[in-house]
Image (tube, rainbow, N blue to C red):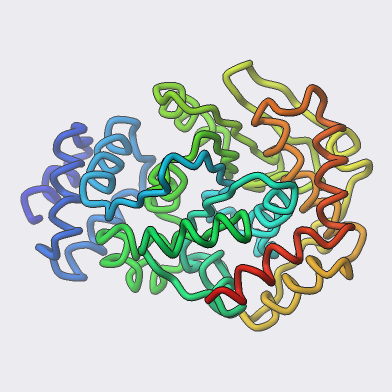
Length: 330
């Protein structure tokens, strides 16, 4: 690691192969916490390059514990995190709304590193038991239309750096990697990013894959459709700017999206929203993200049709039942 660090301290960037090899060694436990912290700090001081990100992704996928869903086509809704907004668990809630429409969802998530409650925090608090057992995951998809893939169970490198990321409390390049290494290899992904630079990088990387994708960026810095301002949407079809009114009927305030101060509070709010007791603003934001995911699958000819399906899932109780069935199966 010393050689790599000296190389980086000379303001040089890693080749794809160098990045791959470094992360492979991190995943295999070759470096201590101080060395890993120094390595991660480099990328807090400058942007990660596309080559470096590709190499890091290569390593994670090479070390990944495989999952076999027997050909089930799944989708994922995931944000990079690290936008510093401390919103409630919008993407994870949107996953349950999508599952309530009958779509199969394999949600990939992790503990919050730069936020109070990440997807894994809230799922664990709700009673979900993390597993990388394919049979368990297939069963959950069959009965609840959704399963959850806790990233450290599948990616040794993410497990190794978890405590360091939490101690740093800032977004790192690992935030960027999460959405790109879902072990279930979803056929469609809705990916939220916190900056236009990240949108550019993700567009380049995802265009090389066979799967369809939709990248969303709230122009006021959110890594999801926030309805607090316009949203940039990028897909294979091109780019488009949507207003809050187009996506969610009207705009909301940033204070409407606050996620609370504890994991317990986040889980309580999560249940409340799925039970149909959320505020208008909370519901609207969840529905907009779910609708964009549904629309992106190509199964709806208009966004408004996808939004209607999301509303039906939440208001009929289908989204809530997806959670209840999933937790009851643990």
